[in-house]
Image 1: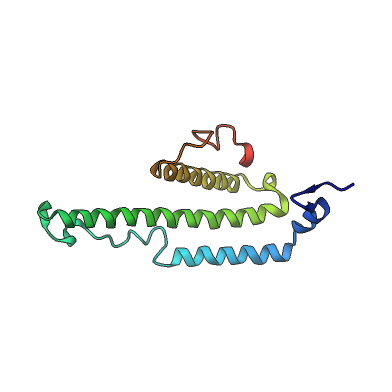
Image 2: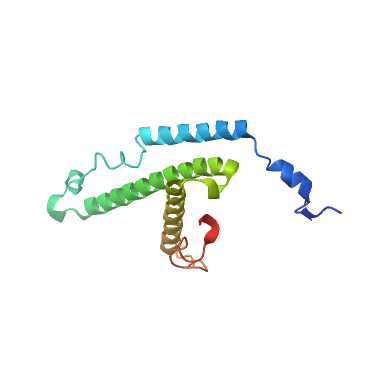
Length: 156
């Protein structure tokens, strides 16, 4: 008797996740291309802040015009979120590329610097999610603190 999970027989699941070196290499190249595109565009993490708008450019210098202060605060907050989003997207793509490589030989076989990079990406993503949940008023996750160091052995 063959066990099934979610209506899919275990033999079918194994076939569905079968590793194909050619397709994974092609996928990794596509991910690398997306990273290059992101970093080379105006949406790259470093380029978003390259030409910042100052408060005085909104008019009403010296705080004389309160609406300009509000407009600048909205601009500055939006820019900060876009920079953070761009960095997270870059991390996501880089982590995906690392995961593709690890799918062939396993995470244990990777160099220590690549493992550390993946762990750092995981931690930055976890921290960003915690921050977003807190700002949105959602409850804290069941495990708090530094997840990568406090018992989440998934990346160790």
